[in-house]
Length: 134
Image 1 (cartoon, rainbow, N blue to C red):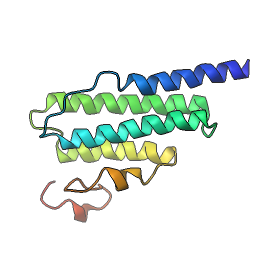
Image 2 (image 1 turned 30 degrees about the vertical axis):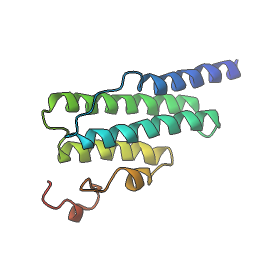
Image 3 (image 1 turned 90 degrees about the horizontal axis):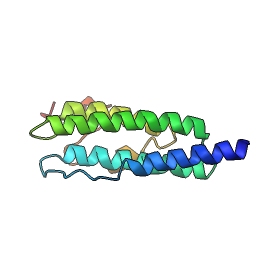
Image 4 (image 1 turned 180 degrees about the vertical axis):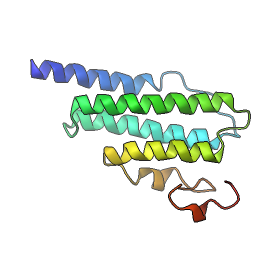
């Protein structure tokens, strides 16, 4: 019974992670912020699914984290579609902070710093990096 419930939750988490990438969005050149957030979100999706398969995270907890990640993804996509010039830096920092929180929760605290920030897209924890892009 417990193995069956675990298998069902594992499948649900895996399907949620793969369903989010089913229809890729056409990204304009002007929206590198969306691209960076999307890449981070996909990494977190994959990490959650891997941790469930490796029994390193409880499936119920993974499902809850995945639902929060899906909510963030939906808001990022909404911001993308509502903007004519891409996600602005303030929105980028806001969503990056939310993704960082999920990353910390699943043990991926430094992935964003190593793979998302740079080339003018800065970590919001250090305001000295913001420069003139506030």
